Length: 219
Picture 1: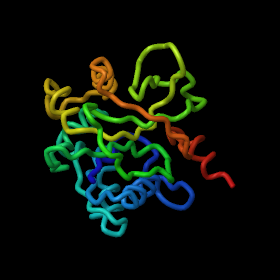
Picture 2: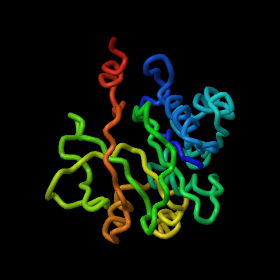
Picture 3: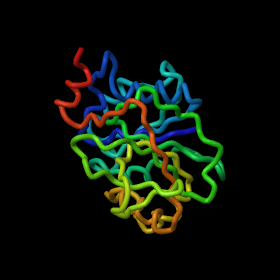
Picture 4: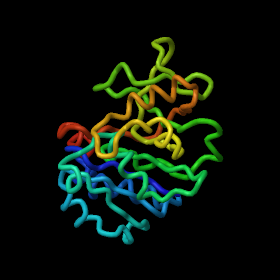
């Protein structure tokens, strides 16, 4: 298994949560799940992240870097970053990959891949809505993500399993190096009935502010 760990934004990924940098929690969880190759995209604190993580061997993975700051002058956002990083994953024809937002805390997440995605472009792991995002992102109906307002809506955890075709087919018109957000492409996959979703009830937090970081580190 392989993964892209998105760490290019101005978030809290290098700050410590319960004794270790947030991004290290992800690397260790990925290694436990059998992931051996990780691409980390960088822009903000680009040199610092590379120096801190190195080649990844001490975390049980091999790390390559997608350098958005060096190559494009700044972060390409979620979709732009994914498109730039995809070639570095060097995926086999039918090989899925994990997509992980580095600014979330999910220490017990199991990165062992499910049996398969079938016809779906990807599988989103959804969590109960946190206080700062009470309306959620998507619903789930018969195992598929939905955008309708009917029924329970959950928040995307920032963790998903995707097929390469999610990028090569849905993002075909996105120029390499252009900034773009992922949400429109998720919506496009949902419109085709090809984005799966499951609920995740394990420990999870969006570490997007100093206050949320302090809450996680509280005794």
